[in-house]
Image (cartoon, rainbow, N blue to C red; front, side, top):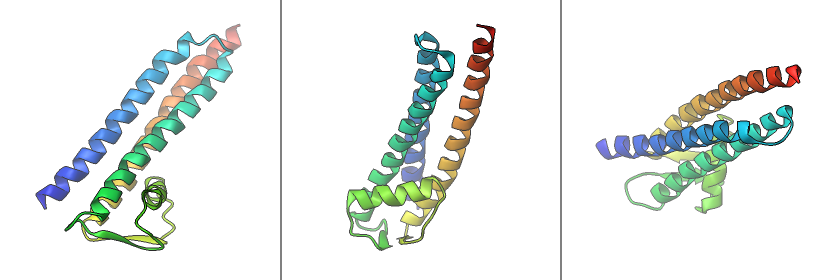
Length: 144
């Protein structure tokens, strides 16, 4: 049980740190851009989407490795064991869409639950970040 907890915490920690680094670097880069203020937000949105996709792939790799290892459980349903199927599953879990065509079994269920919570928190963090950036740059744009 302790190994399940440590693995889940590790995957979540890596994802949160990646997200922090993306947002930190985006916020440092946006003010230096030589484009119109309103287009800076578009750059922020694309940067955030790339961050989320990267984080989803972190979970996908964890699912792939756990699915192919002993004692961690497996994914079943419309699933062929490929990394792409793990990525698809991760996208649906992270966004809490949850189609249900692939089901986690065994200890994989815990990573699935924590990924949904992590996705919710990181998507909300991104929304707050982009709202702050919009207020900052849209107010500046109105003055010029």
